[in-house]
Image 1 (cartoon, rainbow, N blue to C red):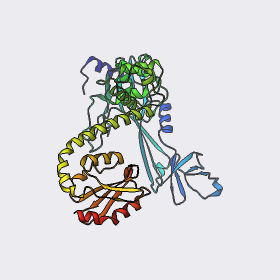
Image 2 (cartoon, helix red, strand yellow; image 1 turned 90 degrees about the vertical axis):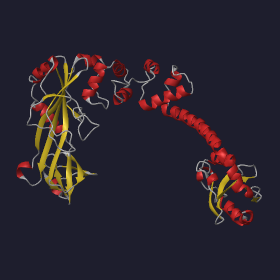
Image 3 (cartoon, rainbow, N blue to C red; image 1 turned 120 degrees about the vertical axis):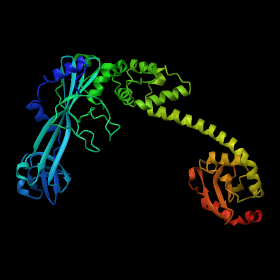
Length: 441
């Protein structure tokens, strides 16, 4: 893209003045971007650090093995072993260098690649290659300009950089194949440790850590958003990440008054999503979100779960009442189809078994026993007869279903669908008295 604005033209001029990557920076990438590992197969190890192939059982080589690791006898590197028969190896990573020029913070992103071949003489030792792909130029107000190479049109690859073409001004945009990722937002795993930072970033809370945010995105966030600056300075890094994930240009952290109280009390929020959900629960129950006692709980998860359980209980009761009201129209039908079984009662000195005589009673049974006899609408099933087994004190023990076609016990469930100690006794009682149900049918 041809530079159009004064700023773009100035950045292209400055781009030409950026120094080339130094040998020290290259060497740091070669040493740190690739894991020290070896391919293990049939008792031999191929060291991917120096290219040496050695036998694991050769005692004169003084091989030291610790778990799934081994020390290469040639270079002395402790290798993490992987079972593999590969004879060729190629690995590439993004590597970033953070620098400044004039008032611009510049994130320079390189592709660093390592190639080896087990049996090709010229590639027995590692061959390293490094080229610059993208630069994020960020001014002191957080405005970004991208200088990058073009991409080759390769299906399902959004960052196939064409290193034969020069770096030019580019516009952000999503790939045709990867709609959720911006190829110019590079979150490199490896960042050169020596960084040149503009003073505005240090002023706004940057301390050298990125907190799970890509360097360019963090810099834009801190330079352009006052709330992000406050979060960084108060070490509320999880809330900072929460804000970034939800598009910091459009979204502020809710309950700003509660956040001010947390900051004043030096309360660090380690789980932003849970804390915000907890504040919504406080608000739901009209609890004071201006009070540090509520806003800064010692055990956030326990308090969150307690209020959530309370809300769920209330909602469950409301839902039950609603379902009972909706089920009233089935009451007459239930009385018509199952009324002939009402009054059947049998048991022994410890257990009493009766037929459930209404839809409302079935709802109570389901709620008390924490199973689905009501929610799965057993009152609508013409061939199911539901009975309740209780002890002498009237406490529910199990709920029984009988099939009115076969007159067999289909199931008998205790609380949360578990069998009780009296399960076999209850089933036997029903089977012994099934004639009463047959007679009523």
